[in-house]
Image 1 (cartoon, rainbow over the protein chains, first blue to last red):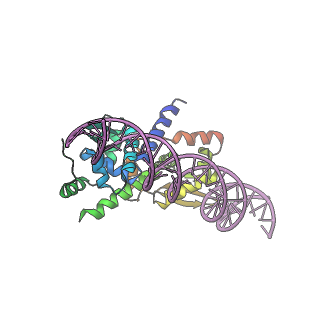
Image 2 (spheres, chains in turn red, blue, orange, green; image 1 turned 90 degrees about the horizontal axis):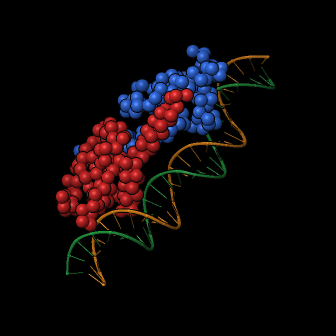
Image 3 (cartoon, rainbow over the protein chains, first blue to last red; image 1 turned 120 degrees about the vertical axis):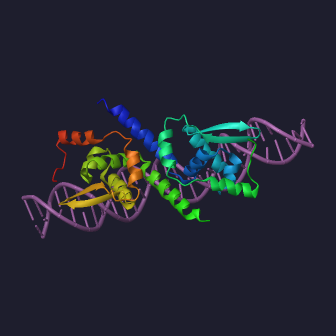
Length: 117
Length: 117
DNA sequence: TGCGCATATAATTATATGCTTATATAATAA
DNA sequence: TTATTATATAAGCATATAATTATATGCGCA
């Protein structure tokens, strides 16, 4: 069965990606980071969850190759890894979602934005 | 905040859809049924799971509006509901997957195909 | 060096999910 | 009618997932 390998591969990778993004917090993180890189403490301030919860979501997204991290001083900034194999699939999904930049603007109003860029 | 309603709605519905399709069996069912309607016993023969397991997956997909059923004699045939709000999103996902028609051809070879159409 | 902040990880708990077994319902055939 | 086949549903169990709490690590600054 020549098709079996690619067939199963595709079904596996797509379903795993959908499972990963089938969580509202993670999906929102991906949308937001696709528009603007952020450090962890900003994401904690934006989402109403604990710091470990955010870290664990970021870990899963990074392990799957969707995110990359970059340290700047004491902060670690996360951004979308556009070299990822599945980036096009990701794009087709998050393109449907409304911009999340307003969340960052709200942070700025509260003075919680880290702008050490 | 004018955007809040649509924003949350979209994030909720898309993440719920992805969670639903983030299961390999359900994703494969959707791909297959998008190509060819099938009755439950065919799906049971195709996937190596029990009849209740298949029924439960079908129930979830139907409850979300992705599938519709139609009784023909003692069989209940499932097919994709193309009127569903999320059908375009569904399409964009399953279009990436390899055809599953070979599974039906295998059924035919084994004489397990229900062709009371 | 020692303290404080940012982040990660480990352990635990709570909840959700998927499967199995058992049973119910509905249609057909004898 | 009774038996058989197809399907759905309910209950129970096992596993997976997400969140919390507690702790560890790493960096910058006094």
